[in-house]
Length: 182
Image (cartoon, rainbow, N blue to C red; front, side, top):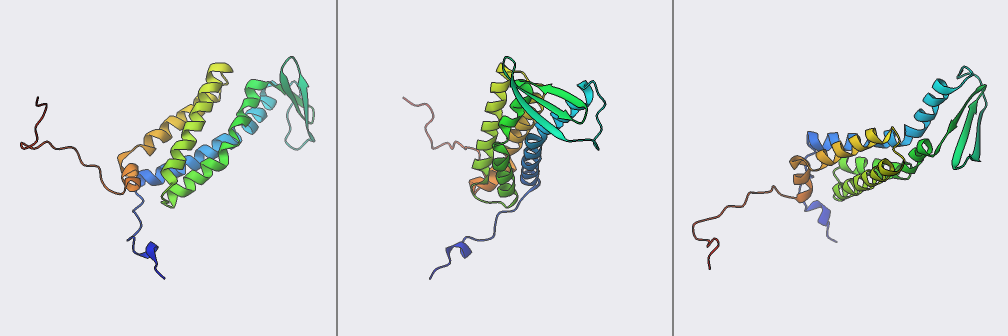
């Protein structure tokens, strides 16, 4: 019986860029998961005619069509109506587990981590662009900023070298090679 995984040598070193990328992915997952609850709570406190008290309840949710889909959120006497541009933050929720997975894989320096992380960022940025061009919700700018920052870190040379297996070397043209000959 052969133990091939023992013959592969020491695991690659996790540098600062890889650590920051993993932590940023986990932070982005928290941002995506909490965008709608924080938005709803801030709107409830700011726009409700009645004062908002966190000790008073219960929380009630009522769906309506007016003319589009809206959610009436009430907590005690405080009440607010959330439209589709606010509720669209829930579209990011299926990406939260993928973001957590990608961040955990990067921190553990697993082989498929970079591909998962880049794929998740493509989904996040694609959804953000779709929401930006259709609904223009206020929170989408922060999500796009986190995605662009993460793509920058994921394409940082120290991160790519870990997943490429060897350092990238610049091309060198020697005198023996014919350049642009007929």
